[in-house]
Amino acid sequence: MDATGSNLSYLDPARREPWASFIEQIDRVAPHLGQLSRWIETLKHPKRVLIVDVPIVRDDGTIAHYEGYRVQHNLSRGPGKGGVRFHPAVTLNEVMALSGWMTIKNAALGLPFGGAKGGIRFDPRSVSRPELERITRRYTSEIGIVIGPDKDIPAPDVGTNEQTMAWMMDTYSMNVGGTASGVVTGKPISLGGSLGRREATGRGVYFAAREAGLRIGTPVLGARVVVQGFGNVGGIAARIFSENGAKVIALQDAETTIANEAGIDIPAALAHVAENGSLLGFAGAKRLSEDDFWQLDCAFFVPAALEGQVTPARARAMRAKIVVEGANGPTTPAADDILNERNILVIPDVLANAGGVTVSYFEWVQDFSSFFWSEDEINERLERIMTNAFEATWQLAQERKVTIRTAAFIVACQRVLASREQRGLYP
Ligand code: NAD
Image (cartoon, rainbow, N blue to C red; front, top):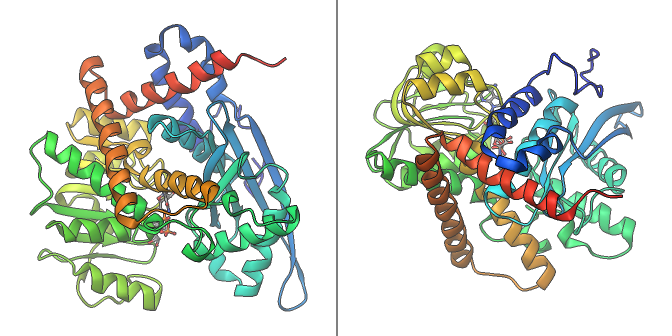
């Protein structure tokens, strides 16, 4: 890999992170797949990788180039689906791993999608709003050859939001000469977005935590909760935990770590972030060291920032009963084993953060029919899909005596590989 993090050597024996984690997770599930395991290599090779150059004229007249990606990991069960990340640490390797986890998540939930992901390596806070719009539009135009309502449907992820999706929808629509609202999800409501989408991932994290807690005698009511990452996922999850009687005792974002044993006032913290961009300077809690944060005694620990955060050292230090993965890939496979040995229950990303893509699915369906559902209908359907998927995965984990992650991967891989087998190989 060169200094910019860009290359195609994903089959390198060194198997760099986080794609290496994804491959290891696939290797672990292979022995559970019976005769379908002969198709397992399908999941170790992304179907399609697109690298695009995104040049723009900056506000000062200079030309800047950014590198963007769209990876379609697997399309056996339907069009690609997965977010777009704007972050300075985005690499092809990372986007590939994220696309693989989308394949697993969509299949584990029974959604009729394959897995995809996209991203551009840059810091969206380092450019002006007009520059951000130009980057987004040029990127959309460049990946326009592989996306579309029946091909691959992007959505928000780290560093992107409803406005990004509005620009992407408009750019794609201009290029095809129509209004293609179904080309992205997570749009503003006025452009065919779905009620409840913005909160869906955090709400789903809460449902997953509640279901896990119910099964091991750890109710949310009165529970101590720690959340890493206070953006779309972590911020909403913290809010819904506290609305349901839990005490959120510590938070961490990219700028700071804070704690309050009496429970942090989450609406006040959210208002502080809306005004100041981060938790830094929030008066309702004390600063906490990074090490202390990972050792807090709590019922639920929600990593909701980036991948690779729960390392083996942190897994050995953690004093949580249940880890609910709001982020994608927050726990390395070695750390996962340590948590398992220490009897800390892990609810994996592919189940715990699936609320976002589930409501994205609802949004896509609503756009096709141009008929929109009420927020209550959406939240009820989300709760039903999440709790059913949780129960099925939990049962399988008990029957096979495997972790919840392995059980979710078994369900998902069986569905993907059975579709692959039924479709057959072309030509
Ligand atoms: P976001 O940009 O809204 O928020 C990210 C948060 O993490 C911010 O508070 C940021 O300050 C914090 N953060 C970044 N780096 C950090 C670090 N090193 N240490 C501590 N905190 C750090 O992003 P988001 O949409 O909330 O996504 C967070 C995670 O959830 C990602 O892994 C993403 O892939 C995953 N996810 C998001 C969605 C969604 O619908 N947005 C759905 C499923 C999964």
